Image 1: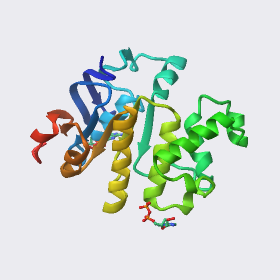
Image 2: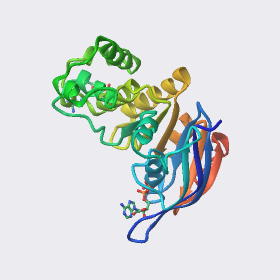
Image 3: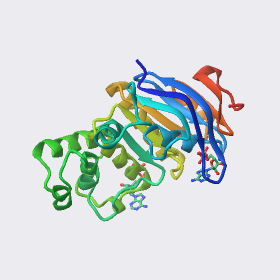
Image 4: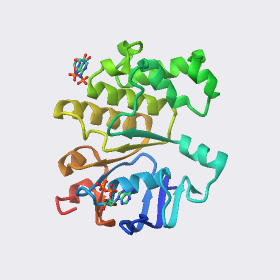
Length: 239
Ligand code: ADP
Ligand code: ADP
């Protein structure tokens, strides 16, 4: 059963720009999907449609068979909890410790006031340590986020996503602001959680070479349309 499905999805922005045009997709659990395309092709528009960071204009997006397009209130929160997010600019709280940042992945499992005062259960702290272990940053638990390098910050954001215990990780340009060495580290971490934890990864990248190195499936987007969808070996720069 697909973990993510797009059923004739189109997105037209209020200024008339076509972001996505009649996209059909079925992503199976455990896939590592990389979305490629030129700048402005619609990659982010597609990513943002998966967890409904924005509404689509037509069609339906389903997560584990449930429409996120139509979901409301608690049901929407419940679906979103299954989807961990990683952003280009990390979205960490700079002055907070790595531990606090990682535990924000537990938002929704916790009353907000407990979050503010840092009153986390021993169980959740253990979750955070485990997640930091996965990205090999356990020695940075009490370091302030803004004391870390960019690559380390991105790995903290991976750990934050992991504490959500997600089924899917969406990584929107996860390496766009990183250097080549750090890039490899971050991509390796994403690959590890995909292979070892079975988490479905959907990432968008500019580089087809990088996509070929990590993806099990590549989706090519051009002007909002899907122009390629297949196994890595068949993807070329055309997509
Ligand atoms: P990519 O991620 O591939 O660079 P985007 O999904 O960001 O592409 O953008 C696809 C198209 O939609 C582009 O033409 C872009 O200018 C346009 N677009 C993106 N966001 C908005 C928005 N909020 N309002 C209007 N147009 C937008
Ligand atoms: P990684 O590849 O793990 O992200 P780097 O090789 O970029 O690590 O950084 C090595 C060390 O230098 C790290 O321990 C990090 O704390 C420190 N460092 C790198 N860049 C910065 C930065 N911009 N601010 C503070 N510390 C940094």
